[in-house]
Length: 298
Length: 313
Image (cartoon, rainbow over all chains, first blue to last red; front, side, top):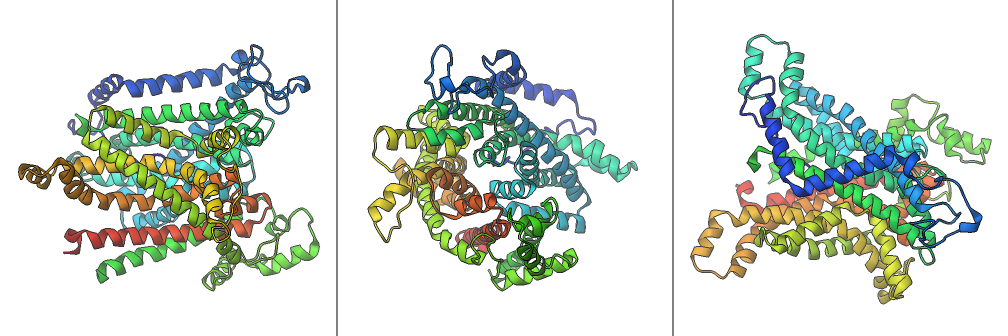
């Protein structure tokens, strides 16, 4: 996984159950001042546009083969060259954006949907529920992230959907642990005590008073986790456990490219560069968000 | 110390039990009859019947787990469907190769990451800080299988200096062994160097603003002595502890690196097992990896405890 989030959280100076708009606006201003984060955001948006506009901007059909254009070097007709069966590398890189972004967003959504409620329950309820969830989380975290994802994808069967499920489940414990830690900090705050004192039921305290105040670190971690998920999907596809041919995916393109590295190096350069840029962009954005949302930076 | 060790061991036992349940549970993800899937494409009825009996597939799930766990505790991780060898033997055969790769990678990561982190912290806000941060981002954002391919392109295809793939045992030819391992080790160490650089930078920044460092400077000590003897020595404790946690990244990375450079290690074993549908080997590899990771975490905690006098007291 990418860098684990440092402890931090929403500014609690408002000390109000309903989050004031102020801290978010201030965080956004701080984020705008960070040039590296803005560069990351711009690159991410560029990839999003590329993924959505792929049918219109890709110069060729990404799966159309051409026996007369096998492993052709970059030229005016094929800017990034062609692959081992004459497919246009640029078109495959453009279409491959969809698989990578989808994997990043869907996997992290799975992790959030599972991890946040479980972490909230552990932190808020405490006692045996917390002990049980913490031990299960430790067990998941004991298995290296990619190895667990590989094992799950292997048992589920190779496909992009299964790869996303495997990555999402493997990354869930990080969100469980992060949410639990944040909830433990927040639940002893005065405004939570006050909410309890006026007779709010526990579920309302958890959802309306605790959850909104732990979202900032979750947003940061989710951004960094997307970067890790993009690399994980590319890794699984590189190993043959993600997107299946002939559908384009940056990881599977690199897997084929390694066999032709001596006579068609362009096949390896562009998809790898695309992975690097997208992951770098999410990491820059995540780092910027962490600095903007962490009150200690002020 | 004894009390701390006992408490820490007490938390490890349930973790390992849950790890074993998780890994055993992987088998439940198989769509359909596990015996038929485990038997491979041949679908030999004798093999299916043998597997059904051997894995106790007709028994309820908790009983099957108990049988499997009983075997694991006796060192029996099952048998490879492909070559009928015990899984533990296969893992132990491949482990030395991965240990060598991981050790070399960690050494490279330490040699790059720690000096870069020190330079970045000492020269905060300078060009060195920017360069070190760019390097860390590069390390964290580069897929290691891509870096591996690029290095093969440069050092094997273009310059012809290093072999593109393959493995030679150090006992056969040490020079050839190092030539075949240096690129994979660099690829694997690169990502961890980035993480270590960040840890070192933040630990050093914290230490360099401490009162004892100010006192050391006030005594007129040379900056080099202040940074290395008073700063780094104290910052090393969290760096080493956090470095030990990178073991998981190291093993995950080894799977891909070994695949790119065709190194017959632990990572290649799991991938070959995945494609041969040799699921017991997959389970065995994950179990050994997770157990090693838990034990290493324990050792890191103990090291932290041992070198930190405040905790000891």
